[in-house]
Length: 566
Image (tube, rainbow, N blue to C red; front, side):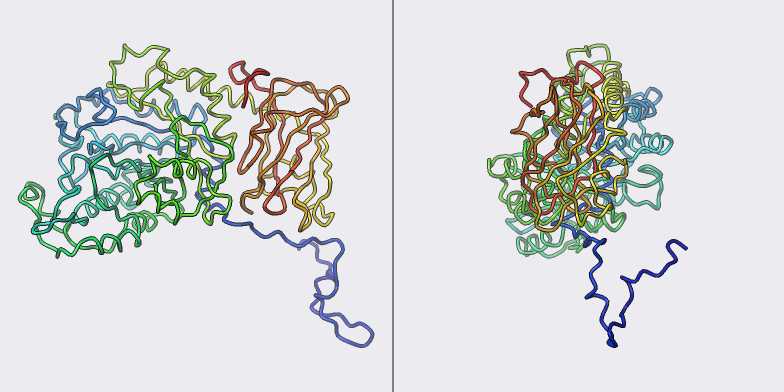
Protein backbone atom coordinates (compact mmCIF):
# COMPACT_ATOMS: atom_id res chain seq x y z
CA UNK A 1 0.00 0.00 0.00
CA UNK A 2 1.46 3.30 -1.12
CA UNK A 3 2.34 5.68 1.78
CA UNK A 4 0.86 3.58 4.58
CA UNK A 5 1.78 6.14 7.25
CA UNK A 6 -1.14 8.21 8.40
CA UNK A 7 -0.93 11.83 7.29
CA UNK A 8 -1.81 14.15 10.21
CA UNK A 9 -3.11 16.73 7.76
CA UNK A 10 -5.84 14.37 6.54
CA UNK A 11 -7.28 13.47 9.95
CA UNK A 12 -10.93 14.31 10.33
CA UNK A 13 -10.30 16.03 13.68
CA UNK A 14 -7.48 16.84 16.05
CA UNK A 15 -7.48 16.97 19.82
CA UNK A 16 -5.88 20.28 20.78
CA UNK A 17 -5.83 21.61 24.33
CA UNK A 18 -8.72 19.43 25.39
CA UNK A 19 -10.96 20.33 22.44
CA UNK A 20 -11.80 18.72 19.11
CA UNK A 21 -10.75 20.98 16.21
CA UNK A 22 -11.96 20.22 12.66
CA UNK A 23 -9.04 19.32 10.43
CA UNK A 24 -9.94 21.84 7.76
CA UNK A 25 -8.68 24.67 9.95
CA UNK A 26 -5.22 23.11 9.98
CA UNK A 27 -3.28 24.45 6.97
CA UNK A 28 -0.78 22.20 5.24
CA UNK A 29 2.06 24.46 4.12
CA UNK A 30 3.27 21.81 1.63
CA UNK A 31 -0.02 21.37 -0.24
CA UNK A 32 -1.41 23.70 -2.92
CA UNK A 33 -5.09 23.96 -3.72
CA UNK A 34 -6.10 21.84 -6.73
CA UNK A 35 -6.64 23.69 -9.96
CA UNK A 36 -10.15 23.96 -11.35
CA UNK A 37 -10.98 23.99 -15.08
CA UNK A 38 -11.37 27.40 -16.68
CA UNK A 39 -14.31 27.63 -19.06
CA UNK A 40 -15.09 24.78 -21.48
CA UNK A 41 -12.73 21.83 -21.81
CA UNK A 42 -12.33 19.33 -24.65
CA UNK A 43 -14.35 16.12 -24.69
CA UNK A 44 -12.66 12.74 -24.90
CA UNK A 45 -13.05 12.76 -28.67
CA UNK A 46 -11.82 16.32 -29.05
CA UNK A 47 -8.70 15.78 -26.94
CA UNK A 48 -7.91 12.63 -28.91
CA UNK A 49 -8.14 14.63 -32.15
CA UNK A 50 -5.87 17.38 -30.81
CA UNK A 51 -3.28 14.74 -30.00
CA UNK A 52 -3.60 13.11 -33.43
CA UNK A 53 -2.98 16.50 -35.09
CA UNK A 54 -2.97 15.26 -38.71
CA UNK A 55 -6.06 14.05 -40.56
CA UNK A 56 -6.52 13.11 -44.21
CA UNK A 57 -9.50 13.88 -46.44
CA UNK A 58 -10.26 11.61 -49.39
CA UNK A 59 -12.32 13.12 -52.22
CA UNK A 60 -13.26 10.42 -54.70
CA UNK A 61 -16.50 9.72 -56.51
CA UNK A 62 -18.60 10.73 -59.49
CA UNK A 63 -16.75 14.04 -59.85
CA UNK A 64 -13.51 12.14 -60.40
CA UNK A 65 -14.95 10.78 -63.65
CA UNK A 66 -16.85 13.85 -64.88
CA UNK A 67 -14.11 16.50 -64.50
CA UNK A 68 -16.16 18.54 -62.07
CA UNK A 69 -15.62 19.87 -58.57
CA UNK A 70 -19.35 20.19 -57.85
CA UNK A 71 -21.64 17.87 -59.76
CA UNK A 72 -25.12 18.82 -60.93
CA UNK A 73 -26.88 15.76 -59.57
CA UNK A 74 -27.99 14.89 -63.10
CA UNK A 75 -25.13 12.50 -63.67
CA UNK A 76 -25.95 8.86 -64.40
CA UNK A 77 -24.55 6.03 -62.29
CA UNK A 78 -23.14 4.57 -65.51
CA UNK A 79 -20.73 7.53 -65.68
CA UNK A 80 -18.90 6.07 -62.68
CA UNK A 81 -16.48 3.93 -64.70
CA UNK A 82 -14.05 2.67 -62.08
CA UNK A 83 -12.37 -0.70 -62.62
CA UNK A 84 -12.79 -2.44 -59.23
CA UNK A 85 -9.72 -4.57 -59.94
CA UNK A 86 -7.56 -1.45 -60.07
CA UNK A 87 -9.08 0.24 -56.99
CA UNK A 88 -6.34 0.13 -54.33
CA UNK A 89 -7.59 1.46 -51.01
CA UNK A 90 -4.68 -0.30 -49.29
CA UNK A 91 -2.43 2.10 -51.18
CA UNK A 92 -4.46 5.12 -50.01
CA UNK A 93 -4.16 4.01 -46.40
CA UNK A 94 -0.50 3.09 -46.74
CA UNK A 95 0.43 6.50 -48.11
CA UNK A 96 -1.63 8.36 -45.51
CA UNK A 97 -0.59 6.38 -42.44
CA UNK A 98 3.01 6.23 -43.62
CA UNK A 99 3.07 10.03 -43.71
CA UNK A 100 1.98 10.21 -40.07
CA UNK A 101 -1.75 10.86 -40.48
CA UNK A 102 -3.83 9.19 -37.80
CA UNK A 103 -7.33 9.49 -39.19
CA UNK A 104 -8.92 9.40 -42.63
CA UNK A 105 -12.20 11.10 -43.54
CA UNK A 106 -13.82 9.71 -46.67
CA UNK A 107 -16.33 11.60 -48.80
CA UNK A 108 -19.12 9.03 -48.94
CA UNK A 109 -21.51 11.51 -50.58
CA UNK A 110 -20.71 14.92 -52.06
CA UNK A 111 -23.24 17.61 -53.00
CA UNK A 112 -24.13 15.78 -56.24
CA UNK A 113 -25.73 13.06 -54.10
CA UNK A 114 -23.85 10.11 -55.59
CA UNK A 115 -23.27 7.50 -52.89
CA UNK A 116 -19.96 5.65 -52.63
CA UNK A 117 -21.55 2.74 -50.79
CA UNK A 118 -24.27 0.17 -51.44
CA UNK A 119 -27.15 2.21 -50.08
CA UNK A 120 -30.72 0.91 -50.10
CA UNK A 121 -32.16 4.42 -50.17
CA UNK A 122 -31.37 5.60 -53.72
CA UNK A 123 -30.28 4.22 -57.06
CA UNK A 124 -27.81 7.08 -57.44
CA UNK A 125 -24.92 5.04 -56.10
CA UNK A 126 -22.04 2.74 -56.95
CA UNK A 127 -24.46 -0.17 -56.57
CA UNK A 128 -26.18 0.90 -59.79
CA UNK A 129 -23.06 1.73 -61.80
CA UNK A 130 -22.30 -0.32 -64.89
CA UNK A 131 -21.97 -3.98 -63.80
CA UNK A 132 -18.25 -3.88 -64.55
CA UNK A 133 -17.81 -0.87 -62.20
CA UNK A 134 -19.96 -1.88 -59.25
CA UNK A 135 -17.96 -1.80 -56.00
CA UNK A 136 -18.77 -0.63 -52.49
CA UNK A 137 -15.89 1.85 -52.17
CA UNK A 138 -16.67 2.70 -48.55
CA UNK A 139 -16.63 -0.96 -47.58
CA UNK A 140 -13.36 -1.57 -49.42
CA UNK A 141 -11.75 1.42 -47.71
CA UNK A 142 -13.12 0.34 -44.32
CA UNK A 143 -11.39 -3.01 -44.70
CA UNK A 144 -8.11 -1.25 -45.46
CA UNK A 145 -8.43 1.06 -42.45
CA UNK A 146 -9.31 -1.86 -40.19
CA UNK A 147 -6.28 -3.81 -41.40
CA UNK A 148 -4.01 -0.81 -40.74
CA UNK A 149 -5.91 0.30 -37.60
CA UNK A 150 -6.39 3.81 -39.00
CA UNK A 151 -9.19 5.88 -37.50
CA UNK A 152 -12.04 6.65 -39.89
CA UNK A 153 -14.42 9.54 -40.35
CA UNK A 154 -17.15 10.02 -42.92
CA UNK A 155 -18.17 13.09 -44.92
CA UNK A 156 -21.88 12.97 -45.75
CA UNK A 157 -23.08 16.11 -47.51
CA UNK A 158 -26.43 17.39 -46.21
CA UNK A 159 -26.91 19.28 -49.46
CA UNK A 160 -28.02 16.79 -52.10
CA UNK A 161 -28.96 18.16 -55.54
CA UNK A 162 -29.93 14.71 -56.80
CA UNK A 163 -32.43 13.66 -54.15
CA UNK A 164 -36.09 14.15 -55.11
CA UNK A 165 -36.83 14.67 -51.44
CA UNK A 166 -34.61 17.73 -51.07
CA UNK A 167 -36.65 20.93 -50.73
CA UNK A 168 -39.90 19.28 -51.84
CA UNK A 169 -43.13 21.27 -51.64
CA UNK A 170 -45.79 19.53 -49.58
CA UNK A 171 -48.91 18.58 -51.54
CA UNK A 172 -51.59 21.23 -51.25
CA UNK A 173 -49.14 23.55 -49.49
CA UNK A 174 -46.98 26.50 -50.47
CA UNK A 175 -44.15 25.48 -48.18
CA UNK A 176 -41.33 23.03 -47.89
CA UNK A 177 -42.12 19.75 -46.19
CA UNK A 178 -38.85 19.14 -44.35
CA UNK A 179 -39.48 15.59 -43.19
CA UNK A 180 -38.86 13.49 -46.33
CA UNK A 181 -35.28 14.59 -46.89
CA UNK A 182 -34.38 14.68 -43.22
CA UNK A 183 -35.61 11.11 -42.80
CA UNK A 184 -33.70 10.14 -45.94
CA UNK A 185 -30.51 11.65 -44.49
CA UNK A 186 -31.16 9.93 -41.16
CA UNK A 187 -31.43 6.66 -43.05
CA UNK A 188 -28.05 7.26 -44.69
CA UNK A 189 -26.43 8.02 -41.34
CA UNK A 190 -27.82 4.79 -39.92
CA UNK A 191 -26.65 2.71 -42.88
CA UNK A 192 -23.09 3.92 -42.44
CA UNK A 193 -22.68 4.44 -38.70
CA UNK A 194 -24.52 1.49 -37.18
CA UNK A 195 -21.68 -0.47 -35.53
CA UNK A 196 -23.71 -3.68 -35.47
CA UNK A 197 -23.15 -4.32 -39.15
CA UNK A 198 -19.33 -4.03 -38.81
CA UNK A 199 -19.28 -3.22 -42.53
CA UNK A 200 -18.09 0.36 -42.42
CA UNK A 201 -15.47 2.17 -40.36
CA UNK A 202 -12.34 1.00 -38.60
CA UNK A 203 -13.58 -2.30 -37.18
CA UNK A 204 -17.11 -0.92 -37.42
CA UNK A 205 -16.40 2.40 -35.72
CA UNK A 206 -16.07 6.02 -36.79
CA UNK A 207 -14.43 8.86 -34.87
CA UNK A 208 -15.82 11.78 -36.91
CA UNK A 209 -18.80 12.82 -39.02
CA UNK A 210 -18.40 15.73 -41.44
CA UNK A 211 -21.58 17.65 -42.30
CA UNK A 212 -20.60 20.39 -44.75
CA UNK A 213 -22.33 23.76 -44.35
CA UNK A 214 -22.52 24.38 -48.13
CA UNK A 215 -26.02 24.31 -49.57
CA UNK A 216 -25.88 26.46 -52.67
CA UNK A 217 -27.84 29.45 -53.85
CA UNK A 218 -31.57 29.23 -54.27
CA UNK A 219 -31.89 26.01 -52.29
CA UNK A 220 -33.77 25.75 -49.03
CA UNK A 221 -34.22 22.65 -46.97
CA UNK A 222 -34.44 22.74 -43.15
CA UNK A 223 -31.97 20.37 -41.53
CA UNK A 224 -32.78 18.49 -38.33
CA UNK A 225 -29.43 18.87 -36.62
CA UNK A 226 -30.99 18.69 -33.17
CA UNK A 227 -34.19 19.41 -31.25
CA UNK A 228 -33.90 23.17 -31.72
CA UNK A 229 -33.88 22.77 -35.50
CA UNK A 230 -36.69 20.24 -35.23
CA UNK A 231 -38.81 22.81 -33.39
CA UNK A 232 -38.11 25.27 -36.19
CA UNK A 233 -39.34 22.72 -38.70
CA UNK A 234 -42.55 22.16 -36.72
CA UNK A 235 -43.13 25.89 -36.77
CA UNK A 236 -42.52 26.13 -40.52
CA UNK A 237 -44.91 23.45 -41.68
CA UNK A 238 -48.48 22.58 -40.84
CA UNK A 239 -48.85 19.85 -43.44
CA UNK A 240 -50.02 16.49 -42.19
CA UNK A 241 -48.20 13.23 -42.88
CA UNK A 242 -49.09 11.43 -46.08
CA UNK A 243 -48.02 8.08 -47.44
CA UNK A 244 -46.82 9.56 -50.71
CA UNK A 245 -46.01 13.22 -51.34
CA UNK A 246 -45.75 13.24 -55.12
CA UNK A 247 -45.94 10.74 -57.92
CA UNK A 248 -42.15 10.69 -58.37
CA UNK A 249 -41.73 8.97 -55.01
CA UNK A 250 -43.49 5.91 -56.43
CA UNK A 251 -40.28 5.18 -58.35
CA UNK A 252 -38.56 4.39 -55.05
CA UNK A 253 -38.92 1.28 -52.88
CA UNK A 254 -41.97 0.92 -50.64
CA UNK A 255 -39.58 0.95 -47.68
CA UNK A 256 -39.25 4.72 -48.19
CA UNK A 257 -42.90 5.41 -47.48
CA UNK A 258 -41.98 6.29 -43.89
CA UNK A 259 -39.92 9.24 -45.11
CA UNK A 260 -42.98 11.46 -44.84
CA UNK A 261 -43.56 10.64 -41.18
CA UNK A 262 -42.85 13.41 -38.69
CA UNK A 263 -40.17 11.61 -36.75
CA UNK A 264 -38.65 13.21 -33.68
CA UNK A 265 -35.20 11.82 -34.45
CA UNK A 266 -32.38 14.27 -35.15
CA UNK A 267 -29.08 13.91 -36.98
CA UNK A 268 -26.88 14.63 -33.99
CA UNK A 269 -29.08 12.46 -31.78
CA UNK A 270 -28.61 9.46 -34.06
CA UNK A 271 -24.86 10.06 -34.39
CA UNK A 272 -24.32 10.33 -30.64
CA UNK A 273 -26.51 7.31 -29.96
CA UNK A 274 -24.06 5.22 -31.95
CA UNK A 275 -20.95 6.76 -30.34
CA UNK A 276 -21.05 9.45 -27.65
CA UNK A 277 -17.37 10.30 -28.17
CA UNK A 278 -17.60 10.88 -31.92
CA UNK A 279 -16.80 14.44 -33.01
CA UNK A 280 -18.93 16.29 -35.55
CA UNK A 281 -17.98 18.97 -38.03
CA UNK A 282 -20.96 21.19 -38.79
CA UNK A 283 -21.95 24.85 -39.05
CA UNK A 284 -24.09 24.76 -35.90
CA UNK A 285 -21.68 24.79 -32.97
CA UNK A 286 -20.63 21.15 -32.71
CA UNK A 287 -17.19 19.86 -31.70
CA UNK A 288 -15.40 21.00 -34.87
CA UNK A 289 -15.74 24.24 -36.81
CA UNK A 290 -14.74 25.63 -40.17
CA UNK A 291 -12.14 28.39 -39.59
CA UNK A 292 -13.48 30.52 -42.49
CA UNK A 293 -10.73 29.47 -44.90
CA UNK A 294 -9.75 26.52 -47.06
CA UNK A 295 -6.09 27.56 -47.12
CA UNK A 296 -5.24 25.33 -44.17
CA UNK A 297 -3.83 28.34 -42.29
CA UNK A 298 -5.36 29.68 -39.10
CA UNK A 299 -5.58 33.38 -38.27
CA UNK A 300 -4.19 34.59 -34.94
CA UNK A 301 -5.57 34.66 -32.28
CA UNK A 302 -7.12 31.20 -32.25
CA UNK A 303 -9.54 30.36 -29.45
CA UNK A 304 -10.70 26.75 -29.27
CA UNK A 305 -14.05 27.79 -27.92
CA UNK A 306 -17.20 29.38 -29.26
CA UNK A 307 -20.73 30.27 -28.19
CA UNK A 308 -22.92 27.71 -30.01
CA UNK A 309 -26.02 29.91 -29.96
CA UNK A 310 -24.13 32.68 -31.73
CA UNK A 311 -22.66 30.30 -34.27
CA UNK A 312 -26.09 28.84 -34.99
CA UNK A 313 -27.62 32.28 -35.38
CA UNK A 314 -25.01 33.14 -37.99
CA UNK A 315 -25.76 29.92 -39.84
CA UNK A 316 -29.54 30.31 -39.75
CA UNK A 317 -29.17 33.84 -41.07
CA UNK A 318 -27.23 32.33 -43.99
CA UNK A 319 -24.29 34.54 -43.13
CA UNK A 320 -21.64 31.89 -42.56
CA UNK A 321 -19.99 32.21 -45.96
CA UNK A 322 -20.91 35.83 -46.64
CA UNK A 323 -20.74 37.96 -43.52
CA UNK A 324 -17.40 39.37 -42.42
CA UNK A 325 -18.69 39.18 -38.86
CA UNK A 326 -19.37 35.48 -39.24
CA UNK A 327 -16.02 34.84 -40.93
CA UNK A 328 -14.14 36.63 -38.17
CA UNK A 329 -16.01 34.73 -35.47
CA UNK A 330 -15.29 31.36 -37.05
CA UNK A 331 -11.66 32.23 -37.75
CA UNK A 332 -10.77 33.43 -34.27
CA UNK A 333 -13.26 31.67 -32.01
CA UNK A 334 -14.58 33.29 -28.87
CA UNK A 335 -12.42 34.03 -25.80
CA UNK A 336 -15.61 33.89 -23.73
CA UNK A 337 -17.15 30.89 -25.49
CA UNK A 338 -19.01 28.23 -23.51
CA UNK A 339 -18.21 25.21 -25.71
CA UNK A 340 -14.90 23.70 -26.79
CA UNK A 341 -14.58 24.10 -30.56
CA UNK A 342 -11.62 22.80 -32.57
CA UNK A 343 -10.77 24.82 -35.69
CA UNK A 344 -10.29 22.13 -38.33
CA UNK A 345 -8.02 23.69 -40.94
CA UNK A 346 -8.76 22.00 -44.26
CA UNK A 347 -6.94 22.30 -47.56
CA UNK A 348 -5.86 20.07 -50.43
CA UNK A 349 -2.49 18.60 -51.30
CA UNK A 350 -3.46 19.51 -54.87
CA UNK A 351 -2.47 22.99 -55.97
CA UNK A 352 -6.16 23.63 -56.54
CA UNK A 353 -9.37 21.67 -56.23
CA UNK A 354 -10.50 18.70 -54.16
CA UNK A 355 -10.95 16.01 -56.81
CA UNK A 356 -8.26 14.56 -59.07
CA UNK A 357 -10.30 14.72 -62.23
CA UNK A 358 -7.68 14.34 -64.94
CA UNK A 359 -6.29 11.19 -66.44
CA UNK A 360 -3.54 9.50 -64.41
CA UNK A 361 -0.84 10.57 -66.89
CA UNK A 362 -1.72 14.27 -66.92
CA UNK A 363 -0.87 15.13 -63.34
CA UNK A 364 2.50 16.84 -63.01
CA UNK A 365 4.52 18.11 -60.09
CA UNK A 366 3.26 21.68 -60.48
CA UNK A 367 -0.26 20.52 -59.59
CA UNK A 368 0.58 19.54 -56.03
CA UNK A 369 1.58 21.92 -53.27
CA UNK A 370 5.29 22.32 -52.66
CA UNK A 371 6.87 20.98 -49.50
CA UNK A 372 7.47 24.56 -48.38
CA UNK A 373 3.77 25.36 -48.80
CA UNK A 374 2.82 22.28 -46.80
CA UNK A 375 5.36 23.18 -44.12
CA UNK A 376 3.94 26.67 -43.73
CA UNK A 377 0.43 25.17 -43.55
CA UNK A 378 1.54 22.73 -40.84
CA UNK A 379 3.07 25.44 -38.67
CA UNK A 380 0.08 27.75 -39.21
CA UNK A 381 -2.57 25.15 -38.36
CA UNK A 382 -1.29 22.65 -35.81
CA UNK A 383 1.24 25.26 -34.72
CA UNK A 384 -1.60 27.65 -33.89
CA UNK A 385 -3.66 25.28 -31.78
CA UNK A 386 -5.83 23.63 -34.43
CA UNK A 387 -5.78 20.39 -36.39
CA UNK A 388 -4.88 19.94 -40.06
CA UNK A 389 -7.20 18.15 -42.48
CA UNK A 390 -5.22 17.63 -45.70
CA UNK A 391 -7.08 16.36 -48.75
CA UNK A 392 -5.88 13.59 -51.06
CA UNK A 393 -7.60 12.73 -54.33
CA UNK A 394 -7.37 9.28 -55.97
CA UNK A 395 -7.45 9.28 -59.77
CA UNK A 396 -9.79 7.49 -62.20
CA UNK A 397 -7.86 4.24 -61.65
CA UNK A 398 -8.67 4.38 -57.94
CA UNK A 399 -5.10 5.06 -56.78
CA UNK A 400 -3.23 8.08 -55.45
CA UNK A 401 -0.88 9.51 -58.05
CA UNK A 402 2.84 9.14 -57.53
CA UNK A 403 3.11 12.89 -57.11
CA UNK A 404 0.66 12.97 -54.20
CA UNK A 405 2.23 9.89 -52.63
CA UNK A 406 5.75 11.27 -52.96
CA UNK A 407 4.83 14.67 -51.55
CA UNK A 408 3.00 13.03 -48.63
CA UNK A 409 6.07 10.93 -47.86
CA UNK A 410 8.33 14.00 -47.95
CA UNK A 411 5.92 15.91 -45.72
CA UNK A 412 5.69 13.13 -43.15
CA UNK A 413 9.44 12.61 -43.03
CA UNK A 414 10.08 16.35 -42.61
CA UNK A 415 7.72 16.48 -39.62
CA UNK A 416 9.09 13.33 -38.00
CA UNK A 417 12.71 14.34 -38.43
CA UNK A 418 12.13 17.90 -37.23
CA UNK A 419 10.54 16.78 -33.97
CA UNK A 420 12.58 13.62 -33.43
CA UNK A 421 15.05 15.36 -31.11
CA UNK A 422 13.96 17.77 -28.41
CA UNK A 423 17.04 19.89 -27.68
CA UNK A 424 15.51 20.75 -24.30
CA UNK A 425 15.73 17.13 -23.18
CA UNK A 426 17.88 16.96 -20.07
CA UNK A 427 17.76 20.75 -19.63
CA UNK A 428 16.89 22.55 -16.42
CA UNK A 429 13.80 24.70 -15.94
CA UNK A 430 13.25 27.52 -13.47
CA UNK A 431 10.25 29.81 -13.17
CA UNK A 432 9.30 33.16 -11.70
CA UNK A 433 7.10 31.23 -9.25
CA UNK A 434 5.03 28.09 -9.08
CA UNK A 435 1.86 27.08 -7.29
CA UNK A 436 2.29 26.59 -3.56
CA UNK A 437 5.96 25.80 -4.14
CA UNK A 438 4.66 22.29 -4.69
CA UNK A 439 6.66 20.03 -7.02
CA UNK A 440 3.38 18.89 -8.53
CA UNK A 441 3.27 22.30 -10.25
CA UNK A 442 7.00 22.96 -10.68
CA UNK A 443 8.57 24.19 -13.93
CA UNK A 444 10.46 20.90 -14.37
CA UNK A 445 7.13 19.36 -15.40
CA UNK A 446 7.25 21.06 -18.80
CA UNK A 447 10.31 18.94 -19.67
CA UNK A 448 9.31 15.53 -18.30
CA UNK A 449 7.48 14.26 -21.41
CA UNK A 450 4.33 13.52 -19.40
CA UNK A 451 1.29 15.15 -20.99
CA UNK A 452 -0.61 15.29 -17.70
CA UNK A 453 1.95 17.17 -15.59
CA UNK A 454 2.28 20.93 -15.80
CA UNK A 455 3.57 24.21 -14.41
CA UNK A 456 1.13 26.72 -12.99
CA UNK A 457 1.02 29.62 -10.54
CA UNK A 458 -0.82 30.62 -7.38
CA UNK A 459 -4.37 31.92 -7.64
CA UNK A 460 -4.38 35.53 -8.77
CA UNK A 461 -0.96 35.26 -10.44
CA UNK A 462 -1.85 35.36 -14.12
CA UNK A 463 1.59 36.18 -15.51
CA UNK A 464 4.94 34.48 -15.12
CA UNK A 465 7.89 32.99 -16.94
CA UNK A 466 9.75 29.73 -17.41
CA UNK A 467 13.41 29.70 -18.37
CA UNK A 468 14.93 26.62 -19.99
CA UNK A 469 18.68 26.32 -19.51
CA UNK A 470 20.01 24.14 -22.32
CA UNK A 471 23.40 23.83 -20.63
CA UNK A 472 25.31 25.00 -23.67
CA UNK A 473 24.82 26.86 -26.94
CA UNK A 474 22.54 24.99 -29.33
CA UNK A 475 21.26 25.79 -32.81
CA UNK A 476 17.48 25.76 -33.24
CA UNK A 477 14.63 27.48 -35.07
CA UNK A 478 11.42 26.16 -33.48
CA UNK A 479 10.08 26.49 -29.94
CA UNK A 480 6.99 24.51 -28.99
CA UNK A 481 4.69 25.58 -26.13
CA UNK A 482 1.60 23.70 -24.97
CA UNK A 483 -1.22 24.63 -22.62
CA UNK A 484 -2.79 21.86 -20.57
CA UNK A 485 -6.19 22.15 -22.25
CA UNK A 486 -7.98 19.54 -20.09
CA UNK A 487 -8.15 22.49 -17.68
CA UNK A 488 -9.25 24.92 -20.40
CA UNK A 489 -7.64 27.50 -22.68
CA UNK A 490 -6.42 30.53 -20.75
CA UNK A 491 -3.40 32.29 -22.24
CA UNK A 492 -4.04 35.31 -24.46
CA UNK A 493 -0.52 36.76 -24.80
CA UNK A 494 3.00 35.44 -24.40
CA UNK A 495 6.51 36.01 -25.68
CA UNK A 496 9.47 33.80 -26.46
CA UNK A 497 13.06 34.97 -25.99
CA UNK A 498 16.48 33.37 -26.34
CA UNK A 499 19.74 34.08 -24.53
CA UNK A 500 22.45 34.58 -27.12
CA UNK A 501 25.81 36.35 -26.91
CA UNK A 502 25.04 37.48 -23.36
CA UNK A 503 21.71 39.12 -24.29
CA UNK A 504 18.02 38.20 -24.24
CA UNK A 505 16.57 38.59 -27.74
CA UNK A 506 13.04 38.10 -29.14
CA UNK A 507 12.38 34.81 -30.89
CA UNK A 508 9.66 34.61 -33.55
CA UNK A 509 7.11 37.22 -34.54
CA UNK A 510 5.80 38.97 -31.39
CA UNK A 511 2.54 39.88 -33.16
CA UNK A 512 1.73 36.18 -33.57
CA UNK A 513 2.43 35.26 -29.94
CA UNK A 514 -1.09 35.51 -28.60
CA UNK A 515 -3.13 32.37 -27.91
CA UNK A 516 -1.46 28.99 -27.36
CA UNK A 517 -4.19 26.37 -26.91
CA UNK A 518 -3.19 22.77 -27.54
CA UNK A 519 0.09 23.77 -29.16
CA UNK A 520 1.97 26.82 -30.41
CA UNK A 521 4.93 26.30 -32.73
CA UNK A 522 7.03 29.46 -32.80
CA UNK A 523 9.45 29.77 -35.72
CA UNK A 524 12.47 31.97 -36.28
CA UNK A 525 15.50 31.88 -38.51
CA UNK A 526 18.08 29.61 -36.88
CA UNK A 527 19.67 30.99 -33.71
CA UNK A 528 22.52 29.85 -31.48
CA UNK A 529 21.50 30.22 -27.84
CA UNK A 530 21.95 28.59 -24.44
CA UNK A 531 18.59 29.50 -22.87
CA UNK A 532 14.94 29.88 -23.88
CA UNK A 533 12.45 31.94 -21.91
CA UNK A 534 8.68 31.76 -22.29
CA UNK A 535 6.84 34.58 -20.54
CA UNK A 536 3.07 34.63 -20.11
CA UNK A 537 2.08 38.29 -20.27
CA UNK A 538 -1.72 37.95 -20.26
CA UNK A 539 -4.07 35.15 -19.28
CA UNK A 540 -7.75 34.78 -18.42
CA UNK A 541 -6.81 32.75 -15.36
CA UNK A 542 -3.65 31.29 -13.89
CA UNK A 543 -1.58 29.93 -16.82
CA UNK A 544 -1.09 26.18 -17.15
CA UNK A 545 1.77 24.99 -19.38
CA UNK A 546 2.53 21.29 -19.73
CA UNK A 547 5.28 21.24 -22.35
CA UNK A 548 8.05 23.35 -23.84
CA UNK A 549 10.25 21.95 -26.60
CA UNK A 550 13.19 23.21 -28.64
CA UNK A 551 13.85 21.90 -32.17
CA UNK A 552 15.83 22.39 -35.36
CA UNK A 553 13.92 21.94 -38.62
CA UNK A 554 15.19 18.96 -40.58
CA UNK A 555 14.65 20.29 -44.10
CA UNK A 556 15.26 23.64 -45.74
CA UNK A 557 11.61 23.87 -46.85
CA UNK A 558 10.54 24.02 -43.19
CA UNK A 559 12.92 26.87 -42.39
CA UNK A 560 12.03 30.56 -42.51
CA UNK A 561 14.21 33.50 -43.33
CA UNK A 562 14.66 36.69 -41.31
CA UNK A 563 12.37 38.65 -43.63
CA UNK A 564 9.48 36.17 -43.46
CA UNK A 565 6.68 37.44 -41.25
CA UNK A 566 5.01 34.51 -39.50
